[in-house]
Image (cartoon, rainbow, N blue to C red):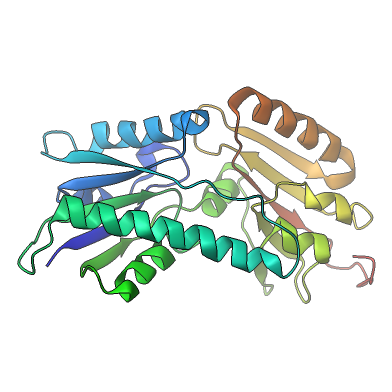
Length: 266
C-alpha cells in the first residue's frame, strides 16, 4: 500500500530536523511541495535546501501542488465555513496528486511526503486534509506523522525562556481569539496567526512580550520587553518586514504579572 509521510521540518532552520525526519526523507519516492506562488518562493527554496542537505544521494522526484486561492477570512460565524471550503479544494488537489504520482493499483507501494513547517500537529491543516482525502474513498494509503520543532518551541528557545512558569499553565491561541479577551485562568499565552497585532488590546495589563518573526531563518527578528515599551517597535518591524518579503510568519509569548488582579478589561 502507498505510504505518506507528514514530516515536520522545523521553523526554518534546516539543521533543526530530527534524526527520525532525516531517516524518513531517505525513504521517500515523491515529495509533494505546496506552491504558494512567487511571493512565497523563499519558502519553497527552504524546502529544496532541506532536501539538498538531508536527502542527498537518494533518488526522488519533486511534484509541485499549486495552493488554491483562499478567500479573505470573514469575521464571526462565516469563518469556519470559509476555511472548510478552502481545505476541501486542497484535498481535491492532494487526492489527484497522490493517485497520479503514487499509482492507482492496490499493490502500489510507493512512498510520498509532505514537508510541513514547524510541527504537523500545531496549527497546520495537512493532517485534516489527508483525513478528508481518505474519507472520499477514491484512494487508500497509510500515513505516518514525524513531529518537528514548532515555531513555538523555536521562539521560546531563541528568547531563552520557558513557555510556562512553575505550577502554571500556558495556552496557545490565535490573534483572533486574543482580540476577544485574555484567556481565562492563564497568565502565559502563546499567540499564533495574528495578522492584526491583537496584543494591542492588552496594553493596559502591560505584560512582557517575547516576539519573533521568521524564527530560525536568516531573516529572523526578535523583540522582548514590556508591551507598553516595545509594541510600537514590533509593529514597525513587522510592517517593514512584510513589505520587504511579501509575507511574514511570526508568533509571540505574552507573560502577565501573576500578582495582578483579574480585570474584565483584560
